[in-house]
Image 1 (cartoon, rainbow, N blue to C red):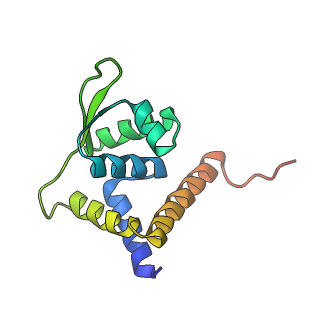
Image 2: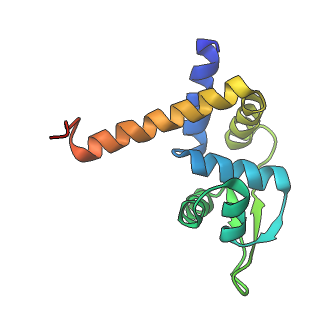
Length: 133
């Protein structure tokens, strides 16, 4: 994939504040499915993630203003994507990423970038590379 596309993916993920593949998958799910009355556990099952990953992703997306959720009623909430006016940087970034992710190569680029970002963060947290004894 072209370097321009890779640069655009990095820029758009940064604009949205997406740092983990779980956050992207949850955001794309909610965007593509529209308002959903569902539990985090159900979303986790549909996406193939652990409930804790989806719960954390929903918390992050909600705090960033990308997803809105209702109060819990018997473990179920209404989740919906918060749409922005046309021309809004968040809306433009999401639209571009959805286009890129429609193709396998684009999805792999997105996933590889987020995995690399997570690996780098993990190395920084541990203070660098440590060899096993």
